[in-house]
Image (cartoon, rainbow, N blue to C red; front, top):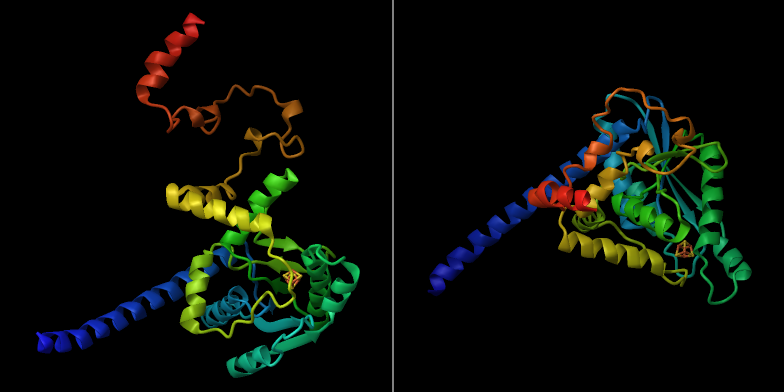
Length: 310
Ligand code: SF4
């Protein structure tokens, strides 16, 4: 018995190692494919661009930089990459980790030292959320640095889950149908901001960070409380994904399949001037005839007589 176990164990573990290597390889390919797809779909990077990759030390921005470096080697166009980290002087920030990592990687980089931590602590009363001022300060500094470095694109590490959460946050708390676009003009109008991870799931980035063993810098050094609303939305999406597989995927694709004529924004669609054209629209109201929630008998034989009886 023992002999069998001893012979089987190394064979099994070799198989496991091969399986893990295969899965890791698939993950890397998937990330490259999804990032390449997003870049192509939104024309994020063009020939001659200088892409400033904002590196926070979190898993997402490490993965972004890593994948962009891979894609640059294969791309039919030429573009430069410069990694930028903003050292906000948070207590215990390990300032040596990113320069060491980036030097080893051989990618040009710049560390911007700006003590936004003290400003935020001074301005925001104790116990209040500091993130909005902190983010605003960080954004302004990064845009300035991008201009100084001659960057033509500013790449951020937001992913598919960030986009979905922001969509629901804006809807639930801001009353707006709005999310984080994969490409947009910066607030100051001087930069184009891109989000090449727009199609990538957070779970894949978590796994990729483990595989690549990125030297992650914890994001709670400032001592700020977690954004509870975002946490709740994250939980809601996770629950939906568990109970109704495919729902989150459908919501995500709905963000790129918008029908302004079937919403209520008068600025997006000319409802006031709408006239019957006499031409049938195959994508018009009949879209809801095939209601997946109704049974055929309910739609045809019971609803119509009921309406007639009324
Ligand atoms: S968690 Fe801390 S560092 Fe991050 S945005 Fe909020 S205040 Fe700034």
